[in-house]
Image (cartoon, rainbow, N blue to C red; front, side, top):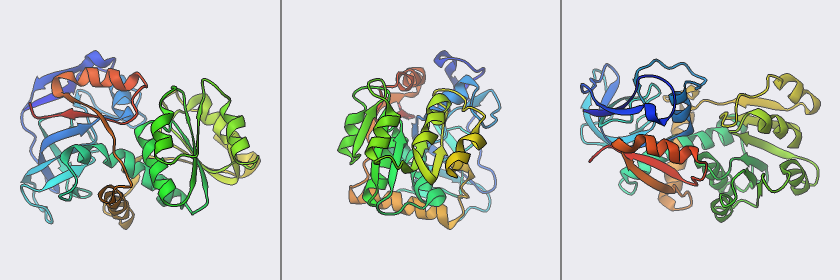
Length: 326
């Protein structure tokens, strides 16, 4: 098979296409004929060697995949060869023509969900779902701040929260990326290069602060976010696009008795009722049409480096996919 391999960490040029042996599914695993792999900010962190969870190199990148089941490992039941599925292979392997994935947590795609959408929603929409409900417990009438609202997780958070009766205010550093979030129901989007987001959020909440803040920037932005969350409110971090967070979390939560979570989707037990509830909720939203999964561009395996450059340009307001088939 052909696969995109990283031999050493660094820039997009480290992504090279190579011929590799087909992977073999072990016990509890399935082999997929890959249709698409989703591109996520975590992929760029792994490529650069700054992902907060340990990885071993060389490796095949990609933690989000759709395809058809080609073979079953020992002990696998509930799925058959030919099934159309999506998966979240935590150890990577999705940037390839074939990929091994755990059978637990495998998402069977209904007839109305294409394989392209199947690779575009799992990480971002399920991350959004578990932040809003598994961790926080969103209620109708809550006010949610979504930093980087124009990205995939931000757009999913916006739609899920608005559909549940919450108000959403967001931030983006890139003019123009506010448009889709507003179309999806955000009440206000602050372009941080043009106005002070702390003042805007506090004005929006009449000085009270938001109930929940979701941040994928880290660094200074995460630090400032605590200033706009109400007493007993919650802050969830899901990334460090601007750099490592300051090591002052205790000092930041003390003044307002706030709580803080750093979420990794892989820590949600894929065999749990909570995982299945998220899958069911998200797939229902896609099927009913109120949860949009915008796909901005599709790249062949040979252009994986270009896909990373596109994502890192910070102008993407939707999903980038890597297509395995020629």
